[in-house]
Image (cartoon, rainbow, N blue to C red):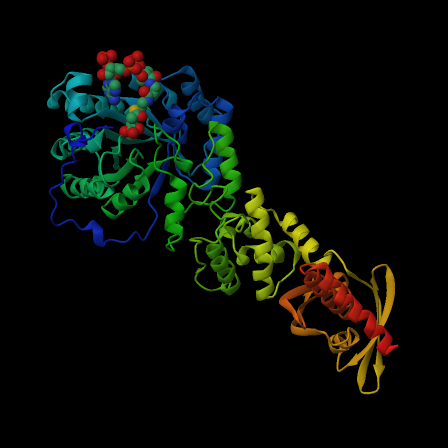
Amino acid sequence: MLKQPNTKYRSFPKVQLADRTWPDRVITQAPIWMSTDLRDGNQALFEPMTAERKMRLFKKLVDIGIKEIEVAFPSASQTEFDFVRTLIDGGHVPADVTIEVLTQAREHLIRRTMASLYGARRAIVHVYNATARPFREIVFGMSPDQVIAMAVSSVKLVRELAEAHPKTEWVLEYSPEAFTGTELEFARDICDAVVEAWGATPERKVILNLPATVEMATPNVYADQIEWMHRNLSRRDDIVLSVHPHNDRGSAIAAAELALMAGAERVEGCLFGNGERTGNVDLVTLALNLYTQGVDPGLDFSNINDIARTVEDCIRLPIHPRHPYVGDLVFTAFSGSHQDAIKKGLAHQRPDAFWEVPYLPIDPADLGRSYDAIIRVNSQSGKGGIAYLLESAYGLSLPRRLQVEFSSVVQRHADATGAEIMPDELWRMFSEEYLEPATTIRYLEHHLFEHGAAQGMRLMLETNGRRITLMGEGNGPIDAVVHALGGMVRVQSYEERSMGQGSDARAAAFVEIAIDDIPGIRYGAGIHANIVTASVLAIVGALNRILNRIEPEAREAVVAMLEKSVRQVA
Ligand SMILES: CC(=O)SCCNC(=O)CCNC(=O)[C@H](O)C(C)(C)COP(=O)(O)OP(=O)(O)OC[C@H]1O[C@@H](n2cnc3c(N)ncnc32)[C@H](O)[C@@H]1OP(=O)(O)O
Ligand SMILES: CC(C)C(=O)C(=O)O
């Protein structure tokens, strides 16, 4: 790259529009949407779509609710021409949908283009010629007046051919191609001439489409250009002002939004931003941006995954996993603080309240996406995401401090493997760590019985291959177990939850214990149909987890104390 890029590139000139009004405007209604997936999108593919794929995508666009669809460049090939004929002759165009086709401003191409449309109920004929100086001078070798004459004579020819076929409702669209690089006065003059040549009226408007054929500047400059045109076109009431942003600088969405604020009423683009080079503006993102501001886009993306798969299959290009609203990863949080906030936000969100879940600009359910995939766990995840996955996949809700304890277990595993951890893997780790820890002391069975005002507990365990029976009593089962264990165990916290519902319901007990003279506090968990059994399992589990972390001699000392308890009680 150059050390001094200013020797090769220069900044885009400002538009003289000191009293611009668009910065204060808010978009309050959806524009007219025009999909050019089957034309601009199609011309940007390794291989153009087959007629079958074009038809499939056409039907999907109709399902979404798009009412104006540019279906072909009929003079480019027989396939393109035939596709338009099939749509018309096969009766595939719904009554509320208008098909559109594109043609250069050249007589033989216009005649062929019009022939493709005869018999249509309503059709938009889209004529274009480039208007920027390099095109005028280098491509066409024409003066500005000659370029205007080219546009005007083409429009007159379309008008003449249209008038010869009055059964069709004809709409003219004109694009000064390369508008963003065209002097604004010249763009206005050629557009005014076209409007005049078509004989436009407020009832028979011309669509004037001002393309960012190449996105050349920041979006505010495009907005200024659109507002300038909006204010300076001589017959604004006879015009539907349309924009066609490309994404060369990556800001097509912003450019389209600012253009709407600046006076545009119609947007041309493609689903998920397919199109020449870096693509056309993405109609899905634009529409859903409106939706998240409370504006009905008039388009239906309730099953966005199905739309995405159809588009990918038709155009044979993948959608990026981080593409707004649709990418596989956009409703996913890997990092701990995001997971924590999303988990809390989802729990806090009421169905009838304004959407307010941190990090999620839209409710994934509105797009037919599931919450399950929102949180995923890898080495950057924290306790919140881990807890969310265990709860959503297994109905297991962990106490907060247990979440902290278990997340360090998960963290070690994630660091070692470097991979994402799926819910079944999390469950396996949780089971190994808490439900089936390596055992010094094995639970066999217990009997709980009334013992006067107290509860008595006979607890059978196995240590070193020997069965021992301990007796205890207390003011409840937990107290009785602690007593049976000789009082060396102190319960720091106890929580129980239910897992599942009805006859399948099980109890989950979580106990946090400490042992006298042994450092560390550990959780144990027990899951069982019987809550007392779950609690006993949790205490024995926690005991084992502590014993697993200490020296063998200390462990033996604890076991010896237990066996001593047997003698004392028995
Ligand atoms: C920004 C856009 O997306 S514009 C749409 C682009 N899409 C397409 O081009 C669709 C596929 N194109 C094609 O199949 C062919 O280019 C055709 C059928 C349209 C034309 O083919 P050809 O007649 O062989 O011309 P070619 O492709 O070489 O185009 C260059 C000629 O078109 C002229 N031209 C280019 N754009 C226009 C225009 N909008 N209006 C009038 N003439 C034009 C050029 O000046 C050049 O003319 P010249 O040969 O007299 O110098
Ligand atoms: C023909 C026009 C609208 C076009 O595709 C462009 O300028 O990008």
